[in-house]
Image 1 (cartoon, helix red, strand yellow):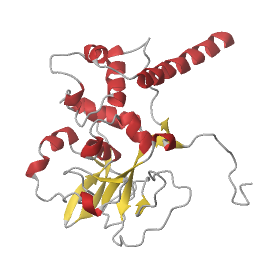
Image 2: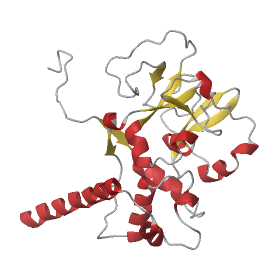
Image 3: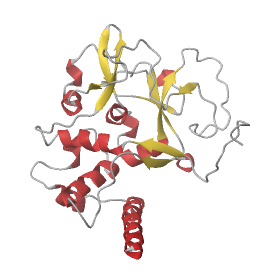
Length: 263
């Protein structure tokens, strides 16, 4: 099948890579100024300036229309796309997973986070530069006049929404929102998710809040005099959120049972 350019496997769902630890690290920066671990970004040159570009930025600078969307739903339903210059004759896209109400829209998929502009990397092009403190950058975005202005709502199709000011690609890219029925399944990539019944419970609470409570900075996730545990207890998770968290735990319980059986 593979040699005939046909799929070599079939699934009932479609999946999207989710490097979850990068988002947790970003949220944690707002509260731990001594944290040494940094996310990594691609360096791009645009309008004579060098900017860092990261998947985390897409959520932090998400459209104001999606202010109340959690990170988990963001991964499932949102995709960054390039705004086409020619907006006159949009053509339908076959089997599109990002169109709303089955309408044809004029954008190109860029889920791989490639940038089709002038890109400049460091001397070793296989390496990325460490990103700046995005939490602090978010607080001061209004002071940097070099950042591009977001695209106008009127120039975008119905299913496209502009980034807020501060995103390096705000003038050339937008967010496409899929319907709930077309939502993808996050494929968690990176270290194992924290457990509810073992390990650092504060870290578990923080991670679940990062996933299911809308935020732009880690400051949005809890009060200054509040523990992650307290914030976790006080936040009203939806039933769907609770089901997903229970599924996380159920997987670990299954692995424990497997190990006990083999012992």
